[in-house]
Structure formats: C-alpha cells, structure tokens
Length: 171
Image (tube, rainbow, N blue to C red):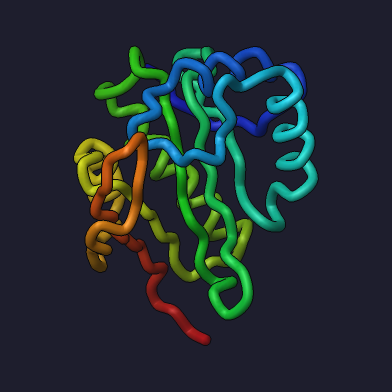
C-alpha cells in the first residue's frame, strides 16, 4: 500500500466532509463540528492553506490514491513555540493497516523541518491504546498522565501526554 501526505485543496472538501462525518468520534476532540458540512470544510481548508508551513503542517492522508484521513502538527504559542501538537484521524475501514504509523512518521519529519520545532507533543485519551501505540512506534515517549482530565460523552478519562524531542536541541 502506498501512503503519502498531501496538502489540502478546495477540491478535497467532499473527502474531508466524509472523513469528519464517518470517523470514530470516541476519542476525537469536540471542536470538530458534527455534522460536518460543506461550509465547515471550505472554511477549514481556506484557513489551513493560509497558515500551512507557518503555524502548522496540515495534510490529507492518502492511501493508494484515496484520501482516508487527516493529520496535522500545530505550533503551540508563547514560550512553547518550539513545540507542536500532533493530531490525526483515519476512516475506520482504514485503521489497523499501518497507515497512521507511516503518516505520523512523515508529518513529524516535515513539521520538525518546516516549523523549526524542537519537539512534538501528543495529548491522547488513555483508553485510545491504538493511537498511543502509533505514537510510540514513532519515537514518542509517555511523559505523564493527567488523571481524570477530560470528559467526552458523559465519561471522564485520563489523558496521556507523549512527546518526541528532536536531538540535539541547541538553544
């Protein structure tokens, strides 16, 4: 299977809508609207096209020529500007095929270079064992657990903080 990342384009709006409306939302941030509509997709694509390479790296995950997910690393702000936060989502029928692992590897390389980051962080609901494993396969280390730190659909969850540091790290 050929996995690649590509910049989002306006023409990809239907694929983005399909992903956002069909992805497993159990562990997904609530800031992504549901249902996800054309106006949401067009606004988001327009925004990320303007800030890509500056405030973050935003890519469609393509498997064998088909967009199957979305992945990004967004620069944090203020004194944390050398850190970026990674997030990704893949359609359920494409999970457990190594796609996320390869996509994370690719976007980390791009984000370290394009954004001049020194580390990339991940904030993951502890029950999302598959996502934690994808990150660990890519050199992320568990840095801590925030106990009972998040709520989703009436449940309270622990949050894992994982990080990958670019070494050496001269300041």
